[in-house]
Image (cartoon, rainbow, N blue to C red; front, side):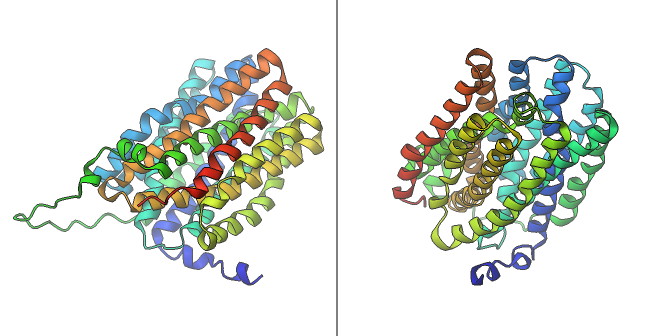
Length: 409
């Protein structure tokens, strides 16, 4: 209990930039969590196959690797505030496009725009936290990612209730998404400060060290710890997202659950996130971020086995809780490690963060496609066993090496 009393949310949220990151994260995930929940079911209603749905779920992550490096450069050049405002504005545009999404092609377009917004958002938000005076990075990111996850699981419950109460009227959901999408634009505009505009002395140009002048990708490849972080992000993103967007389909078609029951499973995850996230942030600050990076891989393996062995409502609930516990334990140390890398990268902080986070995005893009192909070709058992094996391999061959790697400077 003493450790929990040491977790002071007020201290973390004392600065306006952190408030903006937390409020933006919650409202964005609340709005687009409804989309993530409803879109596979909506796509199924349009007659799309499992493989097409897998590609649809992955479209958002597919565009991120192409956009994130550019946004990393934009954050370094324009500042985190302008990049952040760009991201939330593009999300608002994506919410408008939902009302025109009546064909598979238009659904793919919405996911592409969402992917561009996410690619712009991640480097900017991490740079805002890294550039703040916050020293307790683990706790800061536990609050930040906890708000996002809380919004996502709340959206699942809300999406199920809205669909059940409206007779599967998806336009009601899209109207909710549009209304909520205005909030992130407002809070980022008001709470993320403009950078100081102090003119530099004209006669003394600033010289950066040779390491800062190297391309961001070169810096990542030259540092063993950063290379391991790239591999970790790739594998964790793939295994986590193999069920991320397909969970409603698994629960509906394998366990026979209704949208309302699936939404109730999402809402049960709130308690896991509220408990595990703060503890993970506190542990990351006290014991270091690296020891907790294996939590996601272990959870991916265990949840896959639970979905496979117990294809019932109870099995879906337990597996989802394990999945979300792993996510809540992984995100604070992951964000902390990225922020540490940003603080050590000098003027190329945005590009280094974007390079590392791009690896995670590539995995997130590949995961749903691999899962859908495995399910279509060899069945649900093959898909879940491959996911469990990837989670175990990540823990054995990547996470343990990361623990012994020399910290990046």
